[in-house]
Image 1: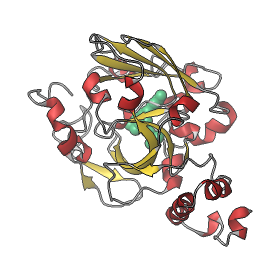
Image 2 (image 1 turned 90 degrees about the vertical axis):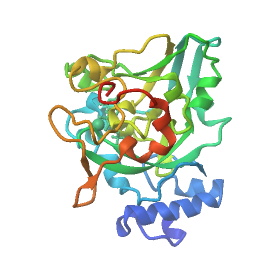
Image 3 (image 1 turned 135 degrees about the horizontal axis):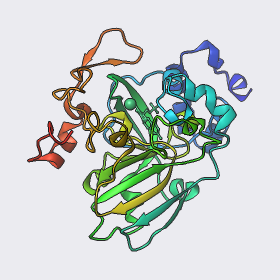
Image 4 (image 1 turned 45 degrees about the horizontal axis):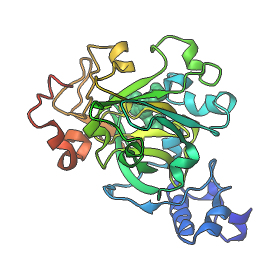
Amino acid sequence: MLIRSAGLPRESEVTDKALWLDRRRFLALGAAGALALSGAGAGAALPAVKGPFSTDEPPTPRKDVTTYNNFYELGVDKADPAQLAPSYFGKPKPWSVAIEGECARPGTLGYEDLINPHKLEERIYRLRCVEAWSMVIPWVGVPLAEVLKRFEPNSRAKYVEFTTLHDPERLPGQRGRVIDWPYVEGLRMDEAMHPLTLLAVGLYGEELLPQNGAPIRLVVPWKYGFKSIKSIVRIRFSETPSRTAWMKAAPREYGFYANVNPAVDHPRWSQASERRIGEFLRRKTQPFNGYAEQVASLYAGMDLAVNY
Ligand SMILES: Nc1nc2c(c(=O)[nH]1)N[C@H]1C(S)=C(S)[C@@H](COP(=O)(O)O)O[C@H]1N2
Ligand SMILES: [Mo]
């Protein structure tokens, strides 16, 4: 209603991107504008400042980002998560994340703690799935490093493990056994602390929808999409790397690092190119998904064909 009276076209009359640009303009007007627009999409608006490292490639339409998903807890087809989420996942909040393991101040990270003292940033990152499709997504989040530092990881904290909610009532895919639930992912400490690594709470200026990993998910843009674990309930500092969900499911196909690497094929298909969702021609996949300048030094001296 407010959108119409404000003289903006209805959502159905414009492309997602145009509407999003209007939203951004309105967000710039401050809280009142943000409030007026919160009814326009599915989630509440999240005002964010522009963060570093954004690509200037055009974002994938919001419709694709929110309806073409991998979230096996909500089905294995790309359309399943958006379709099943409303009847199963329920309200993403309240939500909290347990922070455990090798740190001086283990504790709880509430959703509100996460967005409160921090300025939320918008970062437009490429996401590249191991299945050789890709998207460009305007995330809203906070650098993971800023969050982790609050819990004071100690000198034994060499790795960080992340775990998704385990609740077969809300995540009916967990009644099946495609994966040894709950979904677990891991990063080396320097990867977790890297300024590109984002703890995301929103996209396209709004709170995350369940299909995208509401209310808190990881975004590691130089790695294959499966490292960007959704709906996180636990973060644990550890001395050793975790066996991740995909390493357990298919050890020959998925390793711990999973850096985007056009030179190392998946055993069953090439990783040399990718299909950007919404585009017709394939494009060449870039080393580290185009973030080599920022992250290649983390792997100096490592053979990435062995450490895939
Ligand atoms: N818990 C959980 N996290 C997950 C997945 C999943 O099945 N379960 N799929 C991963 C894969 S394979 C990809 S490509 C990305 C997709 O994120 P998107 O649907 O928000 O684009 O989420 C990742 N995070
Ligand atoms: Mo993926």
